[in-house]
Structures are given as structure tokens and as C-alpha cells.
Image 1 (cartoon, rainbow, N blue to C red):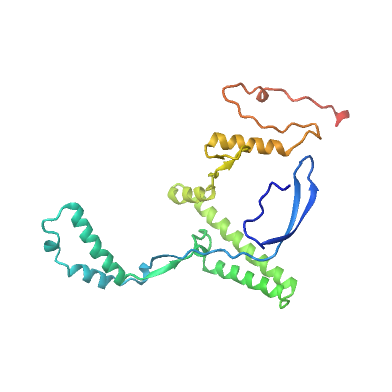
Image 2: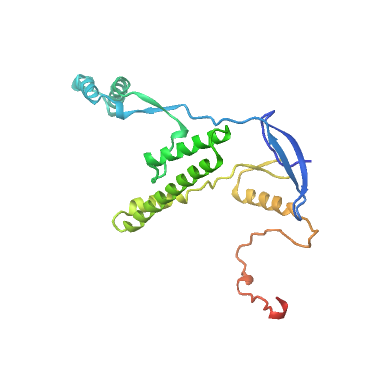
Length: 248
């Protein structure tokens, strides 16, 4: 029996084989083939393209409205709704929209137009090498050149950020926070009885029991993780046994 869900789409993988256990684990290693590629779904959300906006027409449309008569005798909420309606109408006429794709997400600060061209050139060289149009040495040289320029650009911008940290702390700490950004959320888990667990402590206990069950007693080792609170951690003050030269 397999306790690992490989995919939720039929026909995506095939030729599943068990390759035996790894070390002391009682779980089997799984080997499979991907039968068809999965395309990433790009976002179809739209956003305002202010670079192509007609600011003159936008100002003229809002200037034609007699605001004194339109807002006369209105309360704050009604006045805001009237202003918002005229604003959205003028925005629809003067500011075009563009598709916001997840492919064009925020680029690293060291990525400029020249480096984007190098990355594109590297991808094209890989495609030509796979088709047999480019020799392996030429493709390898293209990859090395692109990687070297990326490393130099990254090192240069990090050096500039570190040098200007006293005068521009905001950019430095923004760069550091982007590097430390991780996904800390864990979805609901299913315990042994089949119930969904949503609390953090309960999810930790489920993961603890799962990883403890991976290992068996064949090697004489106990891999059970326990979380204790309010107890002295004597192992921090314990002395390690010494080993003589004849025992090494």
C-alpha cells in the first residue's frame, strides 16, 4: 500500500515501481514517469495601465461636472458614492487596462534589460542544442557566460546596498526581508481517526506521529520527537565523552 498521493489527475504519470526501502525506513521508494507536461495557468487578472492614460481627457471630464449642484444637500456617504461613480466612468474612458500575468512578477533588483537578454539567449541556446542545431561546447559557453554575468550583477547590487546601508536603510532591509520571505502556513491535516486537524498544536502532533512512524527498530534507534515545556534541558550542560587517539 502507498501512503503518498502522487497526483490528482488521471493519465499524468505511469510506470509506477517500488524500489525498496531507504535505510531503516519502512516506506518504499517510488519511481514513476511523467507522461505529459502540465502547463502553468497564468493569471487573467487585469490592471490599470497608467503609462498609456490620457490625463488631459481625465481632468477635462471631471472638470465638466457641476460638483456644487451634484453634491448639494447630500450627506457624506451619498456625496462619496456620486463622486466615485463619476470617477470610475472617467477612469474607464481615459485609462486602458492590461493583463496582469503571473509570469511577469516582480523581478530581482539586479535583473536589468541586458541580463534579461542573456537569460533569453541561454534558453534559445538550450532549445537549439536539444534540436541538434548547436554543439554542446557552444551551449555550455553560453550558459557559463550568462551565469557569470548574473553572479556579478547580484554581487554588485548587494555590495552597493551594504555600502549605502547608513544612508538608505529602507532599501537594504527591504532586500533582506525579500530573502527571508517563506511560506509558514500549513493546511489542515488528517489524523489517524480520519478527522481534519486545523489547530497548530494538533497539526504538530500529527506530523510528529507521522515522522516517528517512518522509522522502525531494525537499527536500534529511536526517532521519536517530543516537545516539552517547562523542563530543564540537561543535554545542553552534558559533557561529551572523550576519545583517545588509539580509539579514532
